[in-house]
Structure formats: C-alpha cells, structure tokens
Length: 556
Image (cartoon, rainbow, N blue to C red; front, side, top):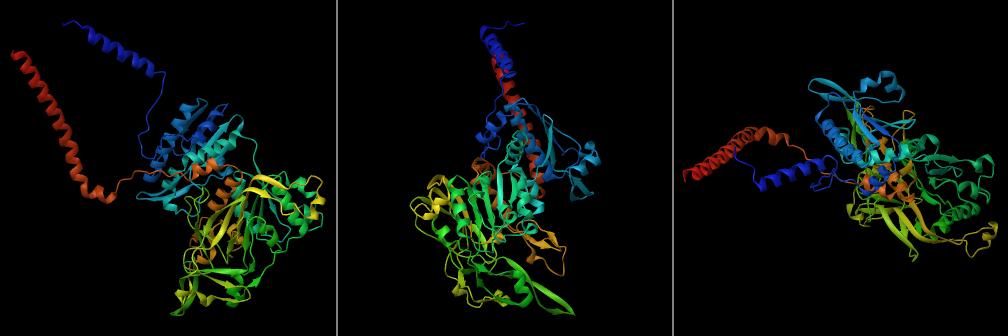
C-alpha cells in the first residue's frame, strides 16, 4: 500500500479539525434575495431577553394542504433561527388532537375547514407557548380581514417573524401599555367599538374612561388630568356632542405631558342607515367646537363631504325579474377608499381603508410640526358642502368631469415639538403645573369616525373594516367586502406608542417561491428526462475522464 505523503496528512488533519469545530460553532450564510432566513435586530433583541425556558408547540402536525405545508416549513425555518439565538427556546409540531377536545374548546381553538380532493380537512393554525407558569395560545395566521381566506396561509408566511415576535413579547413582558377611550361626547357605542377594542386588547390594555359621566360633569375637569396620565394614548372615536373649553384644555395638557392622541372626528352629520330609510338626507354641519384645538396643530377639517368616483361598492335593488327583486353593485361616491398618501411605516404596505362620508382635511403651515398624509382619496374627487341633499341616485355619475379636485387628505399624522394652544391664555391658571410645550409629540387626526366603527349585522358586531352594505339581500349569508381598517388602526397605534420596530416586521415582504401548476403539467416530461439524462451524463463524463487519466498515467 502506498504511504500517505505529508500533504495528504495535512489535508486529513485540517478536515478533521474543521469537523470538530463545526460541532460547536454554528453559522450559515443567507443568500436569499429577501433575506428570509435573517432575523431582524428587533427580534434578536427580543429573543435575547428570554430568560426562562420557552416551549412552543405548533398544532400543524398531521395531514396538510400545500399552502399549509409551506406555512409549516416557514415556521420551522424561523423557529430554528430563534432556537439558535437562545437555547431557552424549544419547539415541536404536534397533532392538535393530542391536546384533547376539551382543551381545544376551552381555549377557543376552532378548526379551519379546507376543501381537498379527499373531502374536508380540519387544520388548526395555532401555537401553544409556555413560559414559566404562564401559557398562552396564538394564531399562526395573520388577523387581517382584508386578506381573502384562500390566500391567508401564504400571506401569513411572510408575517411569521412579526407574529411570533409580538407573541413572545407578550408572554415574556408583563407590562402592557394602556389605551383609554373618551366617551362623554356621545362617541361610538360599545357595540360599534367592539371590533376595535378586541383588536387592541390583543396587545394593549384598553379601557373606557367614565369619570366625566360618573361625576355627572359631562366634561373633563382639571383633576382628570392625573387620571388620564395613566393612559399612554387616548382615542376619540366619532364624537357627536361639542367639546367644552375645559375638555380641550385637559386634552391639550394631556398631550403636553407626553400623551399620544388619535382623533376620528366628523364635521358633517350623514348616516347611511338614514339614507336607506328615506332615499335622501340633508347633510347637516356638526360643530364639535374643535376648530381652535386642531388649528393649533396645523389641521382644519372643513364642513363638507368628499365624493370619490372610485368609492366602495354597495348593493342596491335595480328592478324585478319574474317577481323577484334583482340587485346589483354600484360604486357609492360617499364611501371613500383611503389609499396610501406619503411614505410612512403606518401605511407602507396597506390595502384600501373604508371611509364613510369623510370630510376634507386642510393642512396649515406650522414650522414646528411635521405633517404626513397617511391616507387620501384617489384623484377623481369633488366636494358636497353641508346643508345639501345626499341621495341614493348619486350612484349614477352623470358628469365625471366634475371629479377633478385630485387627492384629498383624510388621515394625517402630526409629530414634532408641540406648543400649547393655551400658553398665552388665562386658562393656564387652572393648572398649577401647566406645561407650555412638549417634545416628540404625536397625534393622528382622521376626518371620519366610521373608520373606527364596526357595523352590526343581525344585531351581531361585524369585524372592523367589513362593509355591511356590500352584502346582497338575496344572499344574506354571503361574505361582505372587507377593507384594511383594522390593520391601519393597529399600525397607527403601534407607531404612536413607539413600536415602530414591530411595524417594520409587520410590513416585511417575503417572496415565497411557488411552482406554476400549468408549467408543471406542460413541462413535466421534459424535466423528468433532464433529471434522468443530465446526472447520468455527468457521471459518465467524470468516469470517462478518470479512465482516460488513469490510462494515460500507466501507459508510460
């Protein structure tokens, strides 16, 4: 036998050393275009703070359809990365039936029925997280009503890092930020705010602030400021009664003390239910006495209603056929669809948001405040001043040339160094610790309260963003058209409360490589032959080269 020479020995020892090092050092290079296997810095910091064993059990064991197999693989890729970053994290895939029917029902883990060639397949898209003595469940599907059901699994694949990072933050962090609802100006009732409240409660502690009603003052008092400070943000959702001077002063001081504010207010009274009852209504102006308050932040909401030629569709009766009423879809110009305005993380990848009878927002110059239009109309718009009729027959647009006003702002972000509107007024004496300015202030103004409102269908609250007027009366169980209202509000609240990092995760786009079924059918035989012939040819070529080199060497 030929002895090993020195070079062979060095190579052998080097390979052996590399093998030993590889048992203790893990690394890999992410060469994907979208960096799908690279965790963001936000997630890495979050994972580093997992100090106790975190056990994750994913209920996607057993048979799955193609979309859900892709989702399962993407979850495995992600959790492998999390486990490598922190050994306290472990995961496994389990059969949902192993949990037992009682536990599934107790935690409201409902199956998702998927139609397959073999019948109906029940899939449980959930994960169970156990951290210390705390156990919680999460959906591995995005909670986005605007995403069609058949696209939900693939849409969720690109949101997995956000979904798991958000849930890990919740289960490992026992301090949640608090959001308060202002309700003493006859704002949206509880039944119409349930969708928003449920969405917010997934991440924040949401609470209705009742002191002005309980105290029967029906207005904020200076003493309310200390109570309001416990909230990180306040929401004013479609008030219908005027704000008193003290209301505005307390809100002003709340903002000056670092509080964040979202106001969804309307300057015209117009409701769709009233139009359906009578066929037309008068759009009365609604003076909430907020002009001076909003003017201080560089915003004015005009008492007019926007008409957008590309409005959302509603269903109307258009005649009878064989004794049965026939229905059709019409674009309703008063249901404006808010599309992305200026570049901002809140709306960077958002679908249209449904507005109803929105008012135009005018931006006023203020050197201290950065104004960002989050949502605006499309280009083809016009205005209807208040004290005019709004009629159902306006679905028939007879003069398209009238819609030339261009994009009109309907949701605006205000941020910067805010100055108090009361800094030079005598009302400041009402507060012994009056603040005249604040830094890093944030406020969002929306010119329609219905953006935050969920409708009722047969007395049951619908999801936020569902358009009940898109349901056909001849098919009352049909699925309504759904818009991205919930996504917009959650993005906005995350931004106001400083969770911009999670916004980046939520907006992250991954390119999931999919096979074209048509191409597979058409090119199946071709690729089968290539996979058979090419490897065989390569082996034969290498064998031939080896034989030729050996023959040449020993022929001498």
